[in-house]
Length: 532
Ligand SMILES: Cc1cc2nc3c(=O)[nH]c(=O)nc-3n(C[C@H](O)[C@H](O)[C@H](O)COP(=O)(O)OP(=O)(O)OC[C@H]3O[C@@H](n4cnc5c(N)ncnc54)[C@H](O)[C@@H]3O)c2cc1C
Image (cartoon, rainbow, N blue to C red; front, side, top):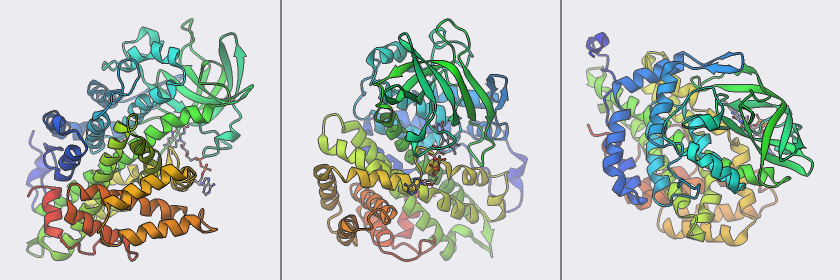
């Protein structure tokens, strides 16, 4: 349908009906380089479908009509349900698992990540239950008989929003409850109590943040007689009565507005144990590792969405008789943004390959363990400043709600905060260095892959020095950031060596981190970011 605003003098036409896959050369290359070339046709169809004008309209509707709590139920706008149905039909909540809950194997992670990255360019709120459902299977593997019961509902592609016991539904989604008032990062301070009741448990306490409260069940942490333990807590008890979850309110959030995030009290809530008592953190961390990966993929997608809009605007808007895209300083800004965007997609797709191969290759397993916190740290922390700079490329239009940049800007910080904030990622990375053999192997592989790139050798030596120093923890962010940049340069090296070199030269050397220093190969970067 034509938009009356399409004809306004010197205002760019709507950004709509875009092929989110084929117009993104760095994405196409990263997919192929990481073993999913065979998915190209399916990804093209997916990219065209998600880039339709109707999808962007629906995303704006979901964002501007946030969910509301009505008694024990949460009501969402139909647009939110439509996105859930789309993403589940595409299997984004389960495609990395076989029907029995074992990993699907290569290239399932890479193929899913490419889709997830494109969805993140359209609507972000509904991705929260999607990511938690897919990640929950990793924690459920600690309780195989429970996983076997749940898998048929988890791998179903039919979204079923009914407020009903999960065994009676055609499909289910799962959420996660760890964070309490007195401690989020430090879950050992959790006070929620679990008491045994026959084969099951009764849980009393609260969670300060629990997103996607209309999920059919949650994996929650609570103190059992033998210590902090992971539990499966469904919305309904086995006799079909409502379970003891009492939602106090929905959080009023900066962004991520189409998604609901609740405060909840548990009163004798029925639950089943997942894994042994006292091993709650070890169990749920299997899930969290995957949600952290998804945070990085989704932040890379947000960056791509912002860059696409900035390029689109600059190619249509004329200022001082010349298109913005032809003005040297604007080109420097756009190309500098494109460089980070290339690096972000390259590094997340390479990391997904490590997850794909983790079960057969010890080095890839070590890479997935060590590089996930570093990559989440760097990509998710890069996104907010990146989106802000892209917003400024649109001038005043960037700041108003008619254009999507304002929404992307509100959305960008959350991926850095939830699932472990920046410092926590750096601390997690430092912990992983305790396995000296694994850490040594990962660093050696990065050294090989970045050989000859500017600044790479000295950056690796810096990491070594910082790790040995007394104040290693104080330098945790520097170590995480440098490691992620090296991993990104290594990933780019296999797809676009000149860009890898430019990225390493500019990002590993200190200096201003404000965007706009012209990269050496600006023309090429801009062509790769979007065909003119
Ligand atoms: C929109 C939204 C939805 C959420 N949904 C869920 C959910 O569904 N389930 C769930 O369980 N949680 C959820 N959370 C909670 C989220 O995971 C936590 O807020 C986050 O992990 C940080 O925990 P905290 O808020 O308790 O902050 P704190 O633990 O108090 O941390 C505050 C700051 O201190 C830093 N810090 C912590 N320890 C150290 C240290 N040793 N050294 C240096 N710095 C440190 C952290 O990096 C952080 O920046 C959600 C949060 C948001 C914003």
